Length: 219
Image (spheres, rainbow, N blue to C red):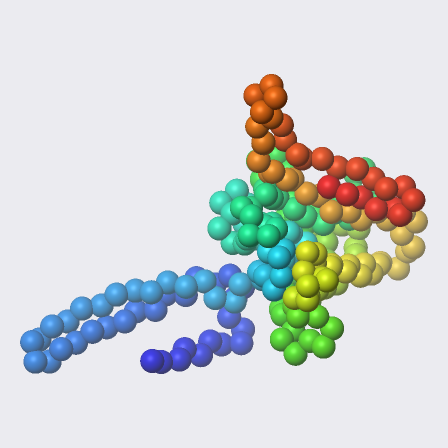
């Protein structure tokens, strides 16, 4: 058993290669092998209750990588298969000024600059899972100039095991007042179609609605 200590300034999402050399002097045997590991990830899995998902350092939800979807759990409820293709926070001040880290055609927008990578607070007295990350939209072609602090909370208790809570604190970084600012979460569900036994047709359960009374979007 051995420990490996990493530098504090190791880059995010760093692919670490470790070479192990073997030698047996009695038989003059020599050999080696490489072990690869991704260290200092910029995402965290949330898995303390019946909702399993992944939070990132750039406003993305479910996965940290686009298309390949190897970095993250997507969104799973009650041990189900993943039902999410992509999710992201969007912030906009007008049709031509929207900042996000979501799909735009065949690529992802890269508007977000990570300031503080997502990290879990293992000493939290507020939740069984608590994480925090800070980022801004300074990489956007027309930035709104906002900074976003994102916190995620989840609880393992029976009365709180079917949801997670996310809080976004959006701060204006420019000297001028932002007259209109909008924020929302884009979710591309991939809920599997279900066979209707009556007419043998497949029905999907991807849906969205808005509760005007409670100002609540449901998807």
